[in-house]
Image 1 (cartoon, helix red, strand yellow):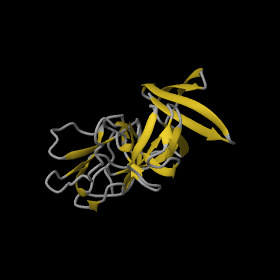
Image 2 (spheres, one colour; image 1 turned 135 degrees about the vertical axis):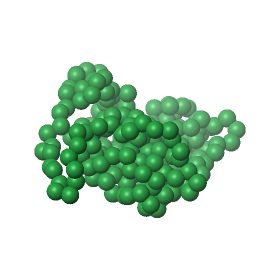
Image 3 (cartoon, rainbow, N blue to C red; image 1 turned 90 degrees about the vertical axis):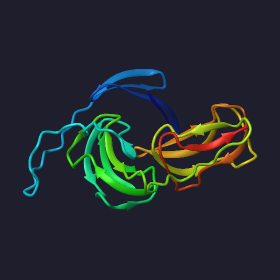
Image 4 (spheres, one colour; image 1 turned 30 degrees about the vertical axis):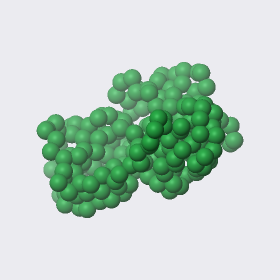
Length: 219
């Protein structure tokens, strides 16, 4: 389940989204729950230079390097890189359409693309491998390591940091907004799950982050 805090016309909504089956989602908005279904309506385009094949999931094979995986079900609408390309952490590598929105998927690594496991039009499920990176050339950017007994606030999904609301040394209460993350074309407040003092802000405005990245450390 993914949790959002969505602000529309200065009104805050707490939104929980859970994919219960392919194209079927359970959505809870401020305590009101609905089941919705979404279906792909994009027309299939057959390119003259591309052989036609049925949409398939990314092939399963033994990982030899680092992998970029889909965080949700959707359709690949644009591939921005090819094998051999050098990419930087945070650089968009493909565009995935999910829940009627197009989302740029960024590389979580610095490195070289070993293989692209999908093509434009491929349908993928959460967890499917999208791109593999060469292990011997991939050097993932070091993330800040908290000292002592600091507790981490981590990103729940990929996005871009648009605002930082606190600074190092500030006191925060559980549930208090710390920063704003733009994801899936919505701005979401990221709140502190703890009472404490901010000992480290691990990102800056404009940074692109992946699910699991450390955003801040509370001591």
